[in-house]
Image (cartoon, helix red, strand yellow):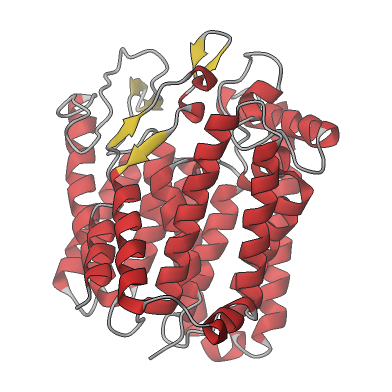
Length: 410
């Protein structure tokens, strides 16, 4: 096995880690307050991906002109290359150049991982290994989540424990939910918020479904993973997983009927779901529940930024400072509106078109339904939160999903 492939498997195993070197710079402060969103970080996963790409280049050598031409003739590749240039232009106009450049470089790095997956990962040989590694992740995270919930705080209370965020029920700004009449802190796992933890599990658990009958480890991990998902108390993640699971069994039951004229059906599903979620989301501002109200207000704020900066946005990471006040310390809870407001209309259209192509393509007969549903899950959850664009673990997971969905069977 090549070194690049070994490092790829290690990166899958270490995907949930939250360990990294933080660089607090002047650009990271907004009106004297440190914003995590603007702090450049070098994560362990970043170093692994750099290693994967470095050894891949060494193993393959300099690509020939024919290889480059074949690469550029692929429509998905063309869209992604244009997306990189478009986001790069938005960096040039950013008021927080260093923070924006750091976000841009991470995006490029993870996109290069996408290309590695497309060209080097085998669906037949490698995906089962990925599932086993993710099963180990899910078991570890779920046991950790149970301990955190019982303790009502971080289990080890030390960032050095795989990046576990120190917290307790008394920590300022910590997420709390009413459970049987009492306030409880949901499980954080190794993530910065329970919603991120829930979104991660929602995608990974669906991947594990088709392997439950083939491997007892996966079976055990799946059921303990359900416990972890429940303890996040992330209603969006619950909805994403349940609708994904029901869709999976429905398509398996009626697969032959479903795949007739599949491109037309998938296109209709994608466009309908995207428009429905994104049109209804701003109406959340009319709800009194703080989480709903905050989301709705951020949607409306993003629209004002888009109107003021339609072409190239306010720059990656510039959403918070672009608002002009400190009412909100988080970006809009919608990855598509976030890309639009920070990177402009060209990046928005290219990003949306990339998902459209990926959902429409779905060329994998064996795992077709899993990745189709996973992409729709990301569109759904990504329309109600921002972590698939702003958090390194789930950003990697998104590009992994896009990469795996583009694979051909061996």
